[in-house]
Length: 68
Image 1 (cartoon, one colour):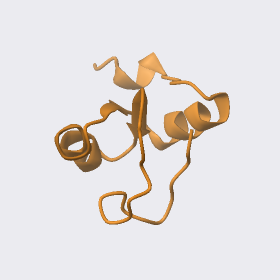
Image 2: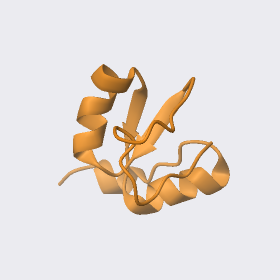
Image 3: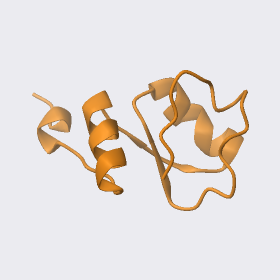
Image 4: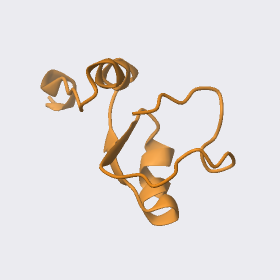
C-alpha cells in the first residue's frame, strides 16, 4: 500500500509492479488509469480512500453510492 498526495502519478512514476486494486477519489484518474497504467481502480470518496489506506483494504460506505 502506498498513500500518494500532492503529485500526479502519471507524471511521477511511483506506481511500480502494481498488483491488486488502486483506489482514488478522482473520477478523471479512475477513468484513465486502467488504460494508461494497466491498473484496476476503485472510485471512492476521500474518506473511503483514507479509511482504506489505514485498513490496508478497500473500505466502502454503500450509503454514499446507493442513489436516490
